[in-house]
Image 1 (tube, rainbow, N blue to C red):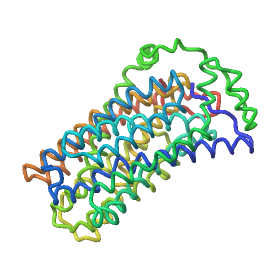
Image 2 (cartoon, rainbow, N blue to C red):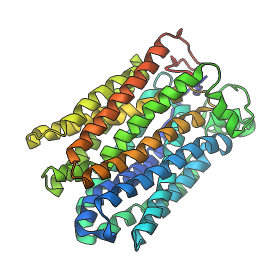
Image 3 (tube, rainbow, N blue to C red):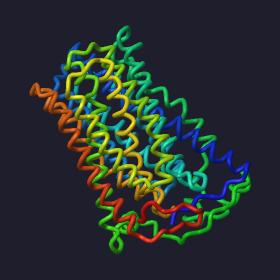
Image 4 (spheres, rainbow, N blue to C red):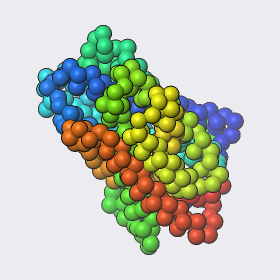
Length: 441
């Protein structure tokens, strides 16, 4: 079962330190992820690298394919070598890959850079989620994860302003040079980010865990049993008994959710420009969408800790589908701003509450694998979403892009809704920390 250390007043410093460091890392993750969509209208307008609308969708899918690889590998690697080392490696990788994009002399090199960046981006998110879950206060795991994910959308907002203030005077390459700056944060992570106490205990590194717990006056979490450490053994754990049904429901919901998230994130500015809005207005949509994401994370996290993450996720996906569909309808600008904001509120946090469900219900020894594979399988949708948007836009069917994304939201609502019903039928259970389990793996 999930285990979080009991936090004393001094122990709260450790929780704050871990969440703060992970928040900044995820901020850079969001900047790097959203920067392509923010600069894409400029690149298409200037015919940078000879990119066409169809190729632009392919390039967006390269990054999400890399995220698929990174997420699938990261969960297993983190459960074997530790969350801290993997976070350092991921930030380093996506920062250097952005530098490759900045110096690219053609579509091939640029695509390679986005793919490598995706590997780092995909590996960081599930690892950071697992890390903060370990240190979350009792009964506040979903809220803590929601707080962490506000950083991702703060990065999206930052990407819009980078595009607005830097791309016009200095060109699109300057935006990717900005995304190299997170390298300066790696030494800070190296010095201050501790390893997960639960990971250390699960791996039998009790002396190291005891020293860390003593330094911050934190209660050492109880051992939950050693695992073999084999990658496939951790994955097989997710399919024991009838848990394979719940696992597949989360994977399918994540597929539709990430198709929606990355399809909209990549194409929102371009689709809105195709509707006749100016570039400044199109980038304002990015800001509003991500501001909504920040609000949504905090609201959904609090609601999920009270009512259950699967239930909140299903409701949020239903509201997302309605909002995305409305974007295909021509409305006054002010009303469109409101719809984009509300869509951001529900869309981004709906997907994150899937991760919260899996993370809260997983044992420390298997948590990163469970979250990583849920994220990783969802990345197939993240690959498909940008490609689908590009094909529809190339065929001059931009309005159908919003409709297709809305259908994806409905499918995720159905799958996570079924998971919520299955969870509700289970007898209440508590882990050693007082969490009411939202799901079990």
